[in-house]
Amino acid sequence: MARQIAYDPNTLRENLLSVFWQQGYAETSLSDLEAATGLNRRQLYNGPGDKLAMFVQAMDDFAERAGREFLGPLEQDGAGIADIVHLLSTFVALAAAKDGPTGCLVCSVSQEEVSQEQAVKRRADAYFERIKAAYENALRRSVARGECDLTERAISDHASGLYAAHVALCILGRAGRPNKELNAIAENALKDLV
Image 1 (cartoon, rainbow, N blue to C red):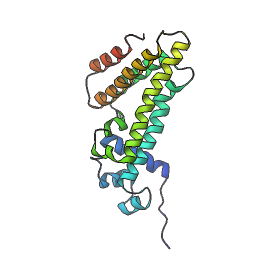
Image 2: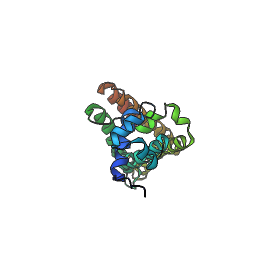
Image 3: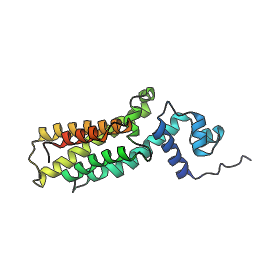
Image 4: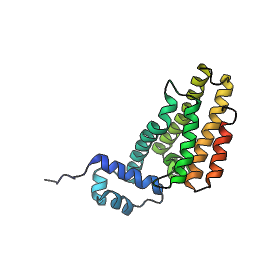
């Protein structure tokens, strides 16, 4: 009778997310995954699956976590300009903190060859759409409450600009660009809204 693999699936998923978030897909070796999880290759393949399957799960976990922490407030009925300002300011602060994975796993991996894998591409596309939709929601709610006066076209245009700033802050923050530069990006994205 085969022995059952003894591990906590939540801890395993958290460890896989952490290593992929820090190193990306291409730079993460099977040895890195073994070290991060405490499981050997056979256990990994018999559990979560091959490297791509582990990465896809990490993308799902990232989207759930980042969606809840960062996009969730913009997706609420009460979302507004203050939530947008807070989110962009948070990205600048996180880049300065340097005490863990920075940037966006989805943004980072979109520049890697693995982004052409259908399972990865679908998830990345869905996450990027969610980012833009979250900004659109917050802007629409702001207009409805009279916080700003934007046409539907202006909402879409501003949401596109905020989405671009969001992605830029994630990528440039991870690259270690100076806070002055990141603040300028955030302020420029907000200049007609606040």
